[in-house]
Image (cartoon, rainbow, N blue to C red):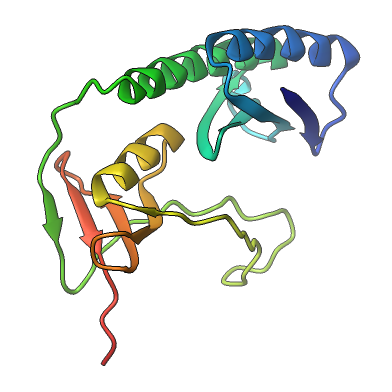
Length: 188
């Protein structure tokens, strides 16, 4: 497993890097298909000292991304918290791969869409309303159910995918009542 540890607005101390490496080895033992893992540590200037350090982990398991983010009063407690989240993500991913079906609410078609999307934190000094992050990712055809599984594994509230059934791009998203929605574009 290729492990990348980086700090955002902080230099990660060597003892914290070693602690992160030990925790990341557990992920690799629980799921052998992990090729890459990225750990980003940041320190935020907050009123609450309990949420000062943020640790975000993204794991690539043969094209399926598992993600967790947790906060803590120090780097070590944030790493412990995100490790627990990632272990749950890995367990859930392995269960789904074994074919254990979870009951899921019905997908609803929505027109016009009203989607509440997660918004990336604005970088310090960035003007409000400006595009501050650009991201590319590989897309493979999948069903809406598979897209919901991927969205849940990432811990996001929406997921862009190429719908194998309709042969067009779509977005699945969480609705406020534990159901899911599907948005597909229609040219006018």
